[in-house]
Image (cartoon, rainbow, N blue to C red; front, side, top):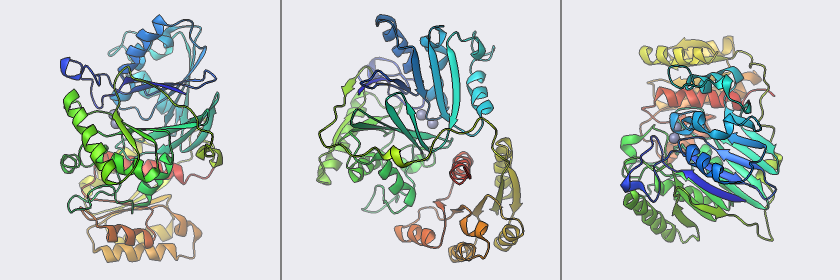
Length: 443
Ligand SMILES: [Zn+2]
Ligand SMILES: [Zn+2]
């Protein structure tokens, strides 16, 4: 499997003399399997560099697969300038998270509207087919792709690619679920089940390309922005037993020297952990080849359900929001209505439990200013309910500003499905709600 980095920068392109080595273009990584299966991970401004390189190559493969982690600008801005999309001999399959194909197409069409780009999405010469995906696996040529949600203020998927006896994980735009903001034990706690699940997604990978936009020192001021401190990227990769870690999604504020500083920080942390992980910072134009060893583990994607969602829109689902702050509640509700969800808004715990018993919703959000013990008691009550719909309903708890390891553990023992710390950004909350609804959607 061959991998080439065409864009490594996060958030916004940052070209110039201070970023010449690691590059100024945003996310775009090319992967080619031994059988020729051609995959492009994200389509940030780096996709234009890839286009220039393709002009120099011979005839292109007829079929390409574009895997989009999410549609923030830094991951799709290169799409209108990706030249193979203008080649009538070319066929592209575009996969991205979501639950409605029309919404996905609109997202790409918007950045090619007449006000923003001279050529419309519908006027591309190549055959371009969109597919909405959720967590699960699917095959593209000789590659088994497994998708898993990341923690980001937009519905975002990470991708694990397994082929040729090797595995590559592309996990960018992800924030750890539980990071203590002070104390000696700074780093990913691995007490939150979602962090442990992330580690399992990275398990034994030959290469992990991971968001490492911040440092732990910078993180408190950027909590909720959906990115990983470099120290936590190391913690994840070490816990997963990964072989190599490519630091990725470099902050636009960081020049080449500062990115190399992150590598030094990461290597010190690896040495402190007594691990053999190799760390480097992804650089634009850098090429790697992954070779399988004689003993390869079974692909983790082989036991998972299909990630490919049906083209038909999903059935409308109801979310019960228990929220003290009416302003916040209304703004969240407006966002979720745009996602086609039905909403029930309440302001107290008793009212939430009564509403849930009366008409069990598809998801319950508890963001209430009541003692934590009462929230945990409510979770236990739901999990002991005679109604199986209430026993299994996803319950999202928002509590505490910097939860301790013990508090996180107690929340899950009480039956919470997810545990989020305050203050929480509405965009992050929306993406958690959407992700949990998709994860709990009957197939
Ligand atoms: Zn990004
Ligand atoms: Zn993003």
